[in-house]
Amino acid sequence: MPAIAIIGAQWGDEGKGKATDLLGSRVDYVVKFNGGNNAGHTVVIGDEKYALHLLPSGILSPNCTPVIGNGVVVDLDVLFEELDGLTARGVDVSKLRISASAHVIPSYNRALDKVTERFLGSRRLGTTGRGIGPTYADKMNRIGIRIQDLFDESILRKKVEGALDLKGQILTKVYNRRAPEVDEIVGELLAHVDRLRPMVCDTGLLLNQALVRDEIVLLEGGQATLLDVDHGTYPFVTSSSATSAGACTGSGIPPNRLDQVIGIIKAYTTRVGEGPFPTELFDDAGAHLSKIGAEFGVTTGRARRCGWYDSVIARYAARVNGVTDFVLTKLDVLTGFDQVPICVAYEVNGVRHDEMPVNQSDFHHAVPIYEYLPGWWEDISECRTFEELPANARAYVERAEELSGARISVVGVGPSRDATIVRHELL
Ligand code: GDP
Ligand code: IMO
Ligand code: MG
Image 1 (cartoon, rainbow, N blue to C red):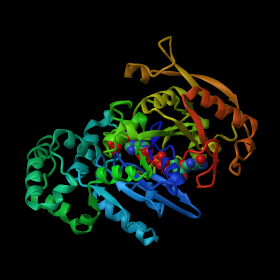
Image 2: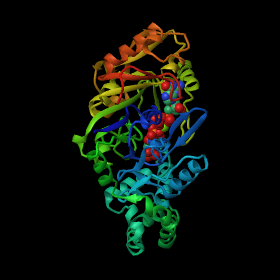
Image 3: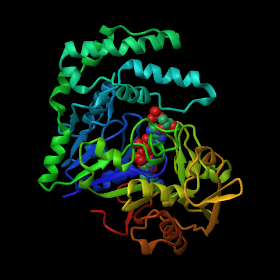
Image 4: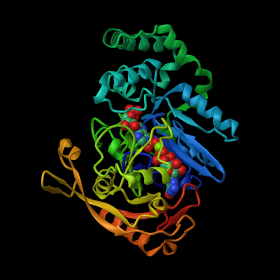
């Protein structure tokens, strides 16, 4: 059986958590392969609402084994806080498995994330302040601390000493902050080691063996295509590989096992933090989307910037990820507009761009070229088949599909699990 990836197609918060939960009962493993507790996934099951950050959303599906892959960066305090919170709500978290090769986020990287943002001033990225960027930088710089290092105190101590040789100097000499002592960091990292030990294994082996047994592995992306460190709007990106190729490096599953890539895309667009966003709205329509769509970050509570659907980035996401199916979420939020624009291309200095401009500066100056579709006023939140949707809502989905480079197989009409229209079964 195959591995399937769920990937954000825009700038995050497309509804990946809900999509993962929808498939959760039909898959055997759900793997988080990138990012850390910068993510915020909301899952609504009946009257219960869960906000997940570090844990894969599959932790809420009783028959599925949740896995934190090698591509993730783990804040150990957050891990156990989240596990305890779910346990208190009756969720069985005992099946969680964590890669021995995942990196941990030491407290000095949280400090560095916050202080660098402050120093950048108007050039800041608007990070979540969780230490994500500095921890991935340490990984590439080969001074990171991995989960497996925690099981040998003398190795751990050497690695922390090595890292602090550099990072302590940066904190004190560049940013005029206190450098932590080696003992302090070692103590902090070892605080949960006994609870951690039984969860840790070679998750790459575990997942590949599962695939050999014909089990289904779902790879749940955090962040999104336009936040990917290679393919996103660099430098206004996160520091991990959030695209489908990252699903392989971040889990140890080879690319030829991945045969379905589900792109999650909102019926409009949002973005948290700084960076270019061609279809961003600054008017009443934007305020309406923000209010009706409840567009506030799950992790930082920041207001999300809102704008119209951008088919240029949809096509880009389809191409970069090899999207086989889109899940178009939050169509219900578009109810109540006379006209609903879709961005079909950009204009930059008098030149039309049907694809993402090669130069980032052009993307910063891209002016959307819109096609205007007639809106609808009917409440669609109770619709469960495509035919039940008003004709104009159907036409909107069909036009978005034509422009976006892959079929739209599922349409979301509300936050709950059942507020979903399936046009083509995903599994
Ligand atoms: P993620 O980070 O991609 O998992 O997305 P978030 O959970 O951060 O943000 C998506 C928000 O939209 C959550 O509050 C979901 O409950 C909600 N949501 C998901 N799908 C739909 C939908 O089809 N309609 C509406 N109204 N809300 C949705
Ligand atoms: P989910 O998984 C939306 C954004 C931050 C910032 C940039 C870098 O819920 O879709 P970081 O802390 O990662 O170094 O911040 O990336 N960002 C997200 N935006 N959804 C997310 O996750 C995000 N994770 C990071 O706002 O602009
Ligand atoms: Mg989110």
